Length: 462
Image (cartoon, rainbow, N blue to C red; front, side, top):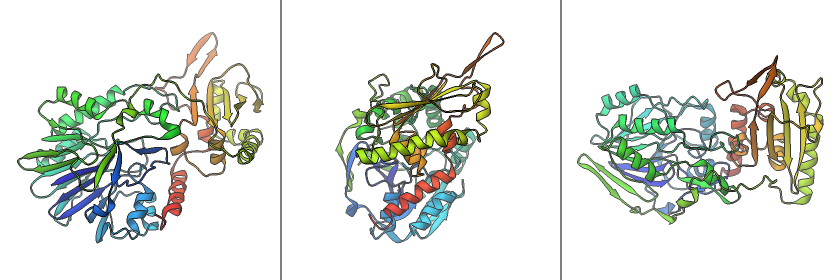
């Protein structure tokens, strides 16, 4: 069996004349066009082996790239005529595949093995409670060796024991290694290595105890004007994780795994072939651009709209929304009870081409009225670029973009004084909801619209 890294979580796995492609991303940009592949690559699509099985692990856009899927579904000549598409039981994901006119779609079930073209493929479950949609890892067994691609899944000791009962000691594993901090900067969350999560990755690798392990996924960076976020989002590296794993569980053999690297897996062991792929090469080794330094300079928020006439149109629409509709929408939300109970003073700052303007809501006041300008206190803050707020109002974007691109930033200092006592809200409590995320709620409806926009954009056009 041979596994080759294209980029990020996109792998080509070949055995017994069968080729499996996982979570394909062939093009920049990705994930709402905020990111690019890192290291950057040159991919010769004409040299890709014919794909017999296409596996999609879950719906995150760094694994479920509509542009690449539209290319594969078109007349690209990469998928074999009878290629099988493996997908989780995710209504929106399956609707996208149907819209793109994929054939031979098989909905997978956790630990339900599939025999396809000489390979035994066993989806492994995830305990990820953060997302409302399913995801799976994948065991690939060819009769001689077994590979596990963990992808982004969260697994338990019982799941690992079951994998061992199925196949004994795994020969090779792509394991999780990087706790991504995407969005932490925007939402004023901790900007440090999440120690418990990092510890859990080491423990999973040790409990799985494969003969050989490589770090999996996380091969991207923020691009261009979003590039400053690279210093906030990637708190470790492949090399650092493997040094820690060597101290934690020295019996596991390991190697870094970058685009164009191949691992030849046999019952006798693993041969790592660096930069050996015929169809993908590293263009520029620019991994240093994601060095974690969450104390460096941060650029201010500015609207992304460059045309002055268009900006003026967007600004007027945003001002009209804030001053004439915003409060009415807020008072309909259940969260208003918490804002009133905690006597919150809320500030909304909107950034245009030449600075910003501020509006406030004093939930401790006698009436719910928007106040232009400052009121001398801030408990709850949301700052957002005019272009992003306009897109939310027009239903043309999602929090998958707004929440990670640094054009939206928020913080909370929630406390109250009652009867001579000082009481403060802590992060261990239930989430303290914010006005914009309440008025424009994330969820299945927003996600579906986002993906359908991408389907319309890319279908038949790549």
